[in-house]
Image (cartoon, rainbow, N blue to C red):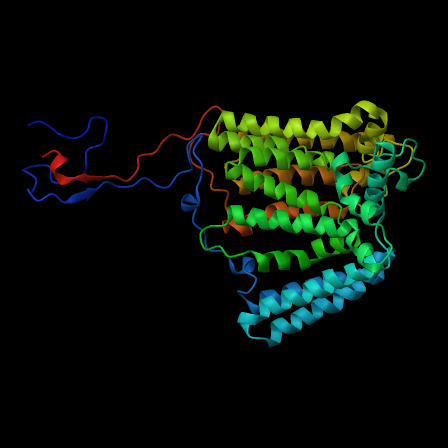
Length: 470
């Protein structure tokens, strides 16, 4: 008896003996489990992974007790600033935000569940973000980094360089790369002659808009079918003390947070050129964003192959160097001192970033402790690099986790740092999971070496019963 099955295909399970029925009816071969796209294959909307059911703590409107607990913790955190902080702007924020969080908790307690989350989020955004930001902006009060960014734009337009040549005090130093100057241009162009231009020219407004726009774009890229608009989770995240305080008083790190999240989402969706351009923006804002470049490139390599990864990497490096090189070639010593040595505490004037993190505590023991801090920082970076090569990321969540781990180690072990810097790794861990509605990185069982790519999987196929061997 001659078999009529297609060579190379597995035999379909069925009747082993006898003739098949003359009435052809389709026999479905078992479908292989859904896999990630092969290298070079784009992941369309129809192939997005399904959303996993989130635990109650991850759904803002799921449990009234969770809402109340969150509002209580936020209110207590904000109320502590007028008591313990020696910075007037932070004390003002705490005085305004504390009652706002308390009102949000009261709304959670009294309103119906379907309205409580939205009403509480609106009250928190209004009282913890918009109101203190308006009060500080109209009075011209901000942290020193906002003034540094706005001054850098004025210097760039008048001298061709965003850096003062001979810094003498802390506020003379500009620890940011040249692209950060863009956020100071509205102040230089609009001035501060009236309340409208005073607010619209404030760099904090543009920090916040960039942050919100990038996170919304990240949500749109990663969300599963029917994943919603993301406005409520974004409002909750923005109104949290983690972001609200930074946004109201300074916010200089918020664009970097949003851009890094967006870069990981674009890399997972195989937007090669867009990924490179967004990475170039991140890498020309602050030098701490450069670890995002290999992470995103290896994510593209693992999912779509070497060609797209090389294109994304070359685009990112080329565009970033186009922004940085003109200043690096003409003001190399100034760039090195202000962007590299000053944040590491290697200049005569020390950075005011002095939160009691392990690196800062070690640096307080003198030159030996400072050296130990830098050695530990190098070892931690090397460990994350080995992790990146040994287990390259396979999703935006995995890439964001890896980047967050590296940045958390860097911020913790650096000789100078602030607790506020940890907002970047925290959002990198939280936001991609909320957007994708998945808590796991979905690592496939295939070998995780860079030289191995996912193997093609057989698809579900319908064949006529007459073609099945008797």
